[in-house]
Length: 90
Image (cartoon, rainbow, N blue to C red):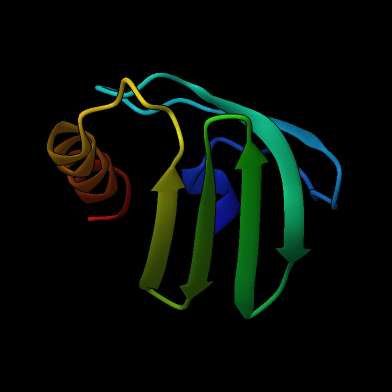
């Protein structure tokens, strides 16, 4: 469920390029820096502007992110992430 919700098709592995697109945020382009498939799916994405961590288990998901870009408004980015998560996984 997690990989599909992120627009990833097929298995992913460490080092694979990825482009995550979320409405209201600039696309996150980077690489998979951590991937564990299965029941407790874990996925980490590292890009030049930030890090994203996703953990899915059943119908639950835990998300962590850190944005490095100076020009990003943290409050607006937080709202955009929340809106994306609500649409994607609600």
